[in-house]
Length: 190
Image (tube, rainbow, N blue to C red; front, side, top):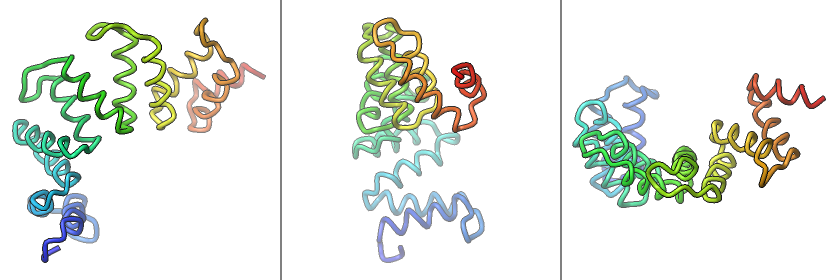
């Protein structure tokens, strides 16, 4: 790490940030993330942005944007959040959608869920239930629990793509995660 290896620097930053085998020290974490970020480590740049998130929204946004330029899906999502909520930037739900869509295409499950909601709601972008279904399914496959609920319900009650077998499978997945609602629905099937 001291010889400039940006991956090692990132991991040392994590050790200080989370107190892993070393005394917790947020300032040291920032120091090591900064070194790693200077070495073009986009994950460290994102982590550095996260460290600034509650201290300095403008600095955090700058770092998230830098990481997002490198294609890091979590940074793409955070830039979307900043636009959605107007953190240090003018609130813009349409721009938020653009950033969420970029993150969704990179496999960010929560962004996939949000993109599905944008399409299904049709408030900030034109309503498109087919695209909404596509993204809710992606988010469910990627493990986002609310998307799994929505997909199971969609298969159960949607008149166009109704598929009780698929609904059962998704509710079974949720029941195996100790979801009481899913356990109840599964029990009703027997």
